[in-house]
Image (cartoon, rainbow, N blue to C red):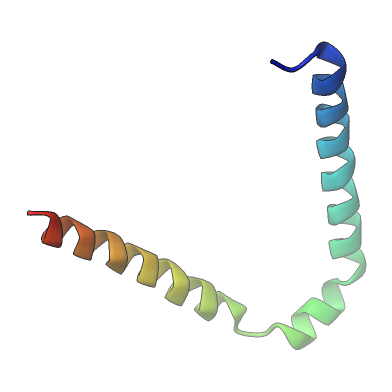
Length: 62
């Protein structure tokens, strides 16, 4: 089990990490819009592929 000190450290670390990530993303938002156009299509293709694998697994299991 984790001690209370370890849990407190983990919570503080997660909060600080998320805060820094939000700050960095906000700072670079213009660059993201310029260089990462169309990245949603890659995400859709990836999720579709994972969904297809689950469907095939269901069919082949029977």
